[in-house]
Length: 297
Image (cartoon, rainbow, N blue to C red):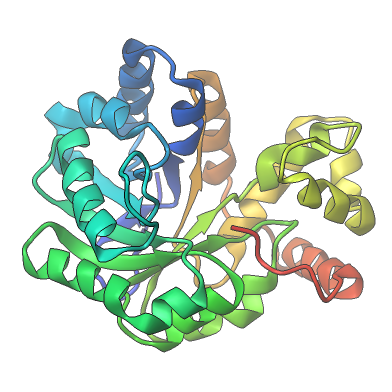
């Protein structure tokens, strides 16, 4: 699998990474996760991203315990996630970091990220100081911010983070102009989350869950490729679009299915979209996007 330099960090990341949210929600058998991540590592994937609140760190830690040197472990912190403390308090951050290390069965992380706190919390500075302390103590190699819109812009502008994880997809393109050019200029590693917009185009009616706003946007955008009779074209175009965005180094996709993993792997093997196809999607967004179509965490 192709790898890209992760900004100025010195790391190289696989263009397709594994996101731990799905297995946290579904909690498949440990043996299923072991097979899935073993196959993904065999395929050249090295980015595994999770969070303290996803309920998947333990599954991932067990699955990669014998292959730690082959992967980059990214996690996020900030939510109290079982602790009787306030979100974003320094105490909950420090406890969560140590718990993540235990769950992931490692003595260091490759990237530790603040998990979608707002701009006001970032500006107070104490949450950033906790991550810097963890880095100084050798608990993480890099620190980053995961989030969108104005908070993500501040996270880039403040100059303290090594990496940014932000929403980038055919239904979520604010970051392409708002944050990515500056992140690229500063040499930050960039992780695209929700690169498939939760695949909401397969729903004939608006979904009940929170990401229904992606469904609303796609109704208005009405991309022609989403109408293709070949059911693989929408997914392939969507994923290749995200990986074609300048400044994006890796896109994380969650699944518990080895079949779906191999489908995604075949998509990224095809490379970026043509410039013509990429610009057509960008133009459609610029024609249709409403002012309130901000990045969605």
